[in-house]
Amino acid sequence: MEITKEDLLKLAKLSALTLQEEEIPALIKQIKSVLFYARSVQKLANNDLVATQEITHPHLRADSVRLCSSQEIMNEAPEHAEGFFVVPRIIEG
Image (tube, rainbow, N blue to C red; front, side, top):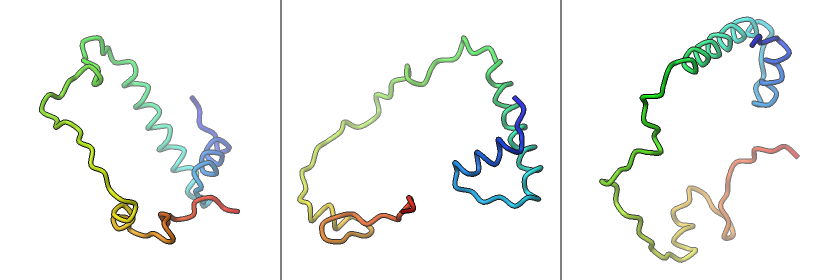
């Protein structure tokens, strides 16, 4: 797959990245390298590998449920106000 400048600019926009014009050629080269590596890994014969979902971990502890009050939960939050968690804004508007 060929990566064009337009592809990179679209990816940057989707990723909320601001790119300088002089960064673009190096980034295209790096992305091509990553895609080449991914293609080569994809081609490996992996029939003898065990999928991770097939591995069981008997040494894991059992889940336990502990009831807590809303105030206990809020006290564990890094920041809260009026009974709600405060998180950074990620969407403009």
